Length: 329
Image (cartoon, rainbow, N blue to C red; front, side, top):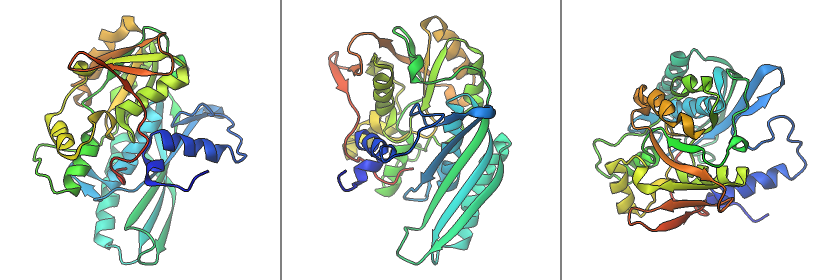
């Protein structure tokens, strides 16, 4: 395998290659080997793990503490799993501000209190100055599935509707604006726990799969679904909810909102007959008030994603290979 680059952490094609390379060293995938972000285990349990590094550590709409909790909560939620327990590892640099650490932990704890999640175990390490950049947080979340069905990309069928719960790219754009001192007073990260938004959907027998659009954004999720299901996906650019501040930041920095990270935006796939019912439920929650139908699954062009552009043409949506904006989550 080649030496690692920042692109290997971007959530796109290089990240997928890195994951396959690690698994290929001899690990047994065991239960949960379906390449979803949350593994469904025997005895009615589910688990996910993630690490978080973000610059700046505090940003409009959140900080690394709330980001860490929301990220793991959402990975469970997308598989219909009620978040219950959290384990956390904290690696801090020598000289790190104790006051800042306490504020970050209060932010993390507030997310856990909101959802009734218990912090059950953890670990701390302090590294010599210069050997770690400030603060890294690792979270491992556990919970119990609230549905008997296994939600995942393998459930996709031709004709299924693809929904998006809110406008994409707000987390990545907020980080970029903060990092480059761009003045966007009304732009905030969408960082939020999504369990309460998606729990009502679990009663729908037509629900196929859900995914939070984190690293690599909506575009990468669509590509992963298409490849995992060996089906095509067609989306319409004009149907994707739009945030003008996100597009302004992208225009200035040369980014594509379709690939910018989200931390409170989910893609949802349902059978076509339940599209409107699902949208009504999503829009009844403040986190889903912008929810929209953005496209459909198709038997045509399997393993590929196409997007009808605002200009009326059609472009290929592929996984990003490099890194647009490192250290966002």
